Image 1 (cartoon, rainbow, N blue to C red):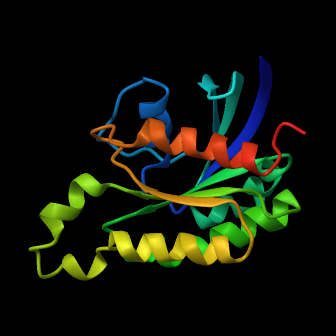
Image 2 (spheres, one colour):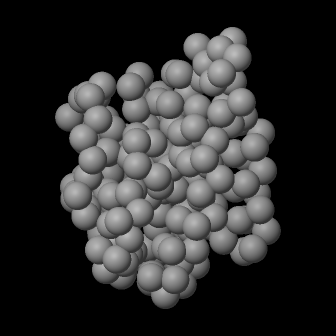
Image 3 (tube, rainbow, N blue to C red):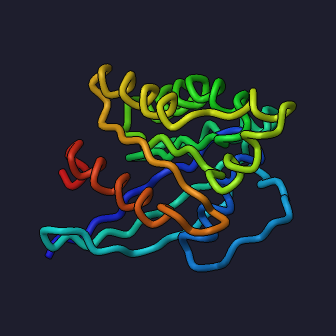
Length: 188
């Protein structure tokens, strides 16, 4: 059995659900109220992967507000993977993903594996019939295409849609990142 510790960052604009994803993954439950993360929050969880790999995921939940940018830079150091999160009902958060990924790779010092996460899929259905909100919806295909563009750059990447509220695909997103880190040579 091989045991490893993977440092990962959870990044994206404020209010896209990063902390809710982490809380749901850690079994702490979903909270509908929003509180900003100041600097970064931190959690560790163990998982078992195929092939006998026991992995501890060290999750750094980074503050999404612009004024925390200078503080965030240090938290990327040593990261082996990233979860790039956007809200499926907030187009600007999707449009900002390239900035987040560039910030990550610059501060990590290399192109680390990334799982692109479209969160809040539970809200997309109720927004699609709202004439004011429907233009903010990001489709599954758009998210998939973005992840494919990263993969074409030689990056170990995946795309998944989640709901921190319902728990849908939350566990799968973290598992997928661990697999991508392994594929990129994370145990060497």
